[in-house]
Length: 266
Image (cartoon, rainbow, N blue to C red; front, side):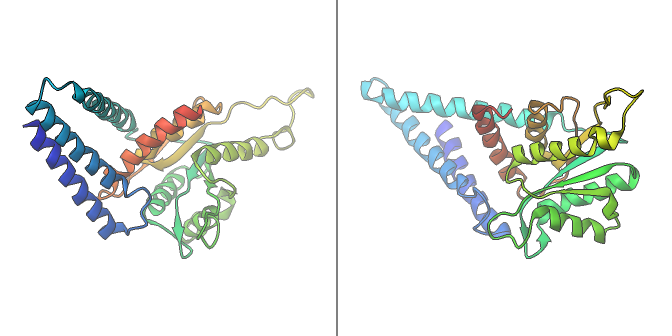
């Protein structure tokens, strides 16, 4: 029975890879992970079959170790998926002073599907919270005509968000830099020179109420990175994600969580 489950998993991975390519294109980041997963499922099915047929073969010890490693990987992935989706807030925290909107890839001066969903959520939020300042965070990657932040601004302007309510952070290349550079902009905006002084002494600047807006599968990692960088009371706001790519993006982000943890970023 286990062998058939593993083989079915391999087939499903290959089918999902084909769906990703047909829906979003062969250039979809890390799409080939699903071919790798299919190979792991297939190899595991073969090893299980051999272990069942030759249980006394001492040469199978490496195979058993491989199976144990794969089982541990599946368990870790399931735990990470629970962490990613378990505490996604159902409602957005109101009246934030600053909302960091994380960028995503753009093409031909237009935001992609993922970024449009984030920007629509940001426009919806500021319509209900007009005193919130948006930090649009995203640099210019290879092949992009301009920075993600600039494209985000143009999109929000066309959806009625005033330019005075937006600050551009256009240097970042990843989530850690998104948060770090955006935090620096917030600190500059709230410097003693702009906040003023109290009672003629050194300025006392209270901690601002900050939120991070990104796709639901990405929110856990973004919030943890923000907390690691000293924004302890950060509020997370989740934008909906593409239902076809949700599984792919959540698996990719789980792997990114492991990488960021090893690098000490969260």
